[in-house]
Image (cartoon, rainbow, N blue to C red; front, side, top):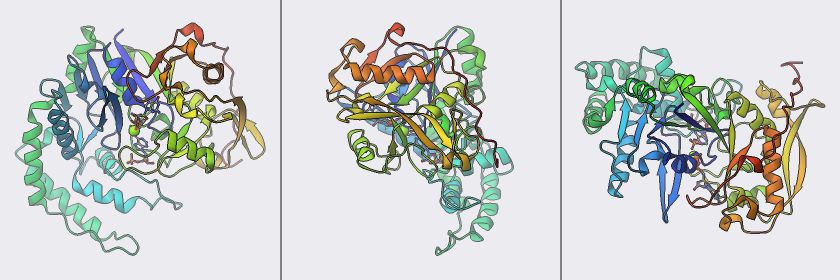
Length: 451
Ligand code: GDP
Ligand code: IMO
Ligand code: MG
């Protein structure tokens, strides 16, 4: 069977890009199937750092097809910027990249709406989006009447479609000022049409029916790697709603987003950081707004790849990651950024929550319960050694090995890859036997919503 998935099990930025780059060598095709330019995936190799948003991290290797499917919302300006950045640095993109004609296109009105609407959650608060127009573009996709797909950019009626949508959006935006702000100025459909025609011409060589391509690829036995974006806790249906993104960013989104049925996937790798981070709003039960959080942020350089915002940091949350590994059908784990934990005397892993005085290992479905969750911690000894030079599991300090075993046990999955630094080389491939696997431990039901 030809398919492997890399799925972030936390709130994004688990170092999926690094892992995809490593696994690309064993695959023929790398696929981005959800999200858009809200993603920021970093690959470091040979002293060079690459930051990719829309284009699969596989593009850095030769002989691999990179596919952006219809499940992605595509900002053509971002795609072109990325293609030009890659070409200017000597990476071949022509002949290696396909963009789905089914992908919905991000327009300027989506970016304006994103800015205007964030902070207007029913019940108050802000999601703290990346401001890339992701939510509004997905909303128009599902709403259909105002949606424009990549394939539509090549149709003769593009101008009238843009005029139709812009007229509607201009009425909406004019009536929608943020408190203390003037209403957004009107969008000029003629200028937008010209700009998007030019984008379309630049992207023409890459546009394809990627569903047809991928179905044939799996049928002839090509090995396909699905590169998750965001993390499963940001999944619109199963994450920490409403503090989520607007796509199915858990493993559940692979088939719908790519057009490749799940029966073609035989290996799901769940990626976790050795601790927790989150950018934007919403609960982070294990957050350490203290010296420990500072240690993690500074050693892990925890600042957003896309927005540069400082990431909120905390201990590893095994309740959340066990939930998302089950949700995503994870077979194996990759534990990233383990080196960042070095220098802390004692480490903590959250193994249960207390909600209204009741202990549970089940991740709550209601945000109001998650907001009340008090983590129950297991503590483990830390280590002083610099892990960034370690290349074999056996050479890790005993405390680091025990920490990995604890994660594997709590998630009931083997840890097969450990990352100890940003570079490709700073990676440890583990023998499955080094990871103990305990029998499944059923979780306690959490308190019912409202009860
Ligand atoms: P992604 O969105 O999941 O691809 O992750 P990001 O690229 O947004 O964030 C991960 C960050 O951690 C990047 O800056 C990587 O270069 C860096 N990184 C990846 N693996 C390691 C690691 O093992 N140790 C350290 N210290 N940094 C890492
Ligand atoms: P990668 O692929 C971390 C977060 C935003 C915000 C919420 C909704 O790099 O892991 P959106 O712009 O999608 O409407 O924002 O989701 N978010 C991410 N956080 N990594 C990401 O991607 C993210 N993509 C979106 O910060 O809280
Ligand atoms: Mg990222």
